Length: 114
Length: 115
Image 1 (cartoon, chains in turn green, purple):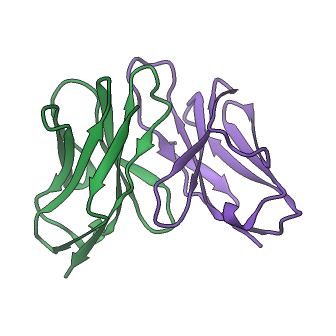
Image 2 (tube, each protein chain N blue to C red; image 1 turned 90 degrees about the horizontal axis):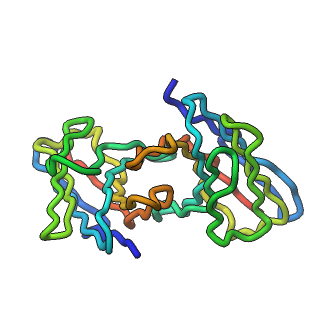
């Protein structure tokens, strides 16, 4: 069975500050990991994904995440927060052979303070 | 075209009504999904269609009936819903038949209110 834990349901950062959203996964097989963003009253949009290969993954809007197998983590970072980054962020996991079934974390709401 | 469209945007229905949600994509994706999302919660998978065949049903009550008439279209037929079924219903699509999973492209959702 696979699961995802996102630490912190709400994170507040000042505009221009570092954004760090935490995600830890549990999977009995090699995972595939995703970060999605959801703006109010909208669907989800993929920020980045890790499947195989390079463990540091760069995504859209200046976000990146690093897959750390030893820590079972896939934290999302952005060096400098922008007001437009305020949204809900979901970490998600799936695996080879069952990848239609994606398990989402509970989400982290990012607030950016001017 | 990298868009998934959903209609209607909003739907209010009584518990005795029959209504349908519609989802369309023209990206050539052969996997399509229905999710239910309650407020402040993550999306919950309901159904998956692969090559127009139902491949996953997450034990969804029969008052929800999915249909995939062709590779571009996905419907969700609603009948005798309960107030607790009020939620945002999201449709998604992805490529199929690949060794590694590809991203799911999500539509904007239908906001359903059951009175």
